[in-house]
Image (cartoon, rainbow, N blue to C red; front, side):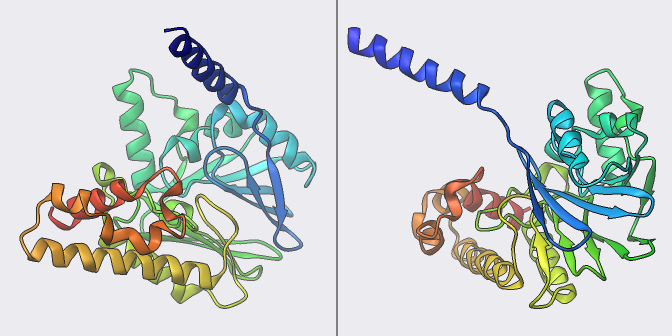
Length: 289
């Protein structure tokens, strides 16, 4: 009994300390004017321009002060624009705080719809957090030293995903259509699908070249080869699961079949938010809808 009590206290202490662990915002310089910020939540892209700071995603609201402080080390200019790659809170949580700094928020039209719907369900619409400018298929932004292209990719991670490409800087931000070195989270309840997810990676590979720096939604800064490996993994597992479905295997059969993902599990793909069991189940559900 005493050992169990000590073990319980140790687990509680470890959990509390993990929650209190300081989040550190780090900067990677990708070009003269383009940066990547990592902290807790989706990776942030930053472009320093003549109008101020243009940022892609803004993590959680509680981290806004730290993010703003770190951005001051890049430039004293204000944040003028924020573009969201999709609607999830670890990418849009800081929207209201950034809007209070004077930023205009952009996103694919489904992002605004889903954010507003979720807020309505909670009984409180925060209009400052919602995108002010929305687009359907794409958006072009022109600056003195950069041309930014936003592309909507259909039914991938969600139904409102956008890839953001810096044409001159040759940097692509993929949001959560790319989890570098990890199995991805595909939000089936919000319009995501494995087939759309694969098409998003194929679309990205049409844009990039060997010198492109790719910012994933989660994970380390990536290259074209990293994205090619990620796509090969998705296709291989999807093809294998489709064969299992064609052979009459059930969702439970596929979910429990560790052989399907074994080659990628040993490479650490299941070490992130989505483990191997979850990715097998998600792909099965997506293919059988």
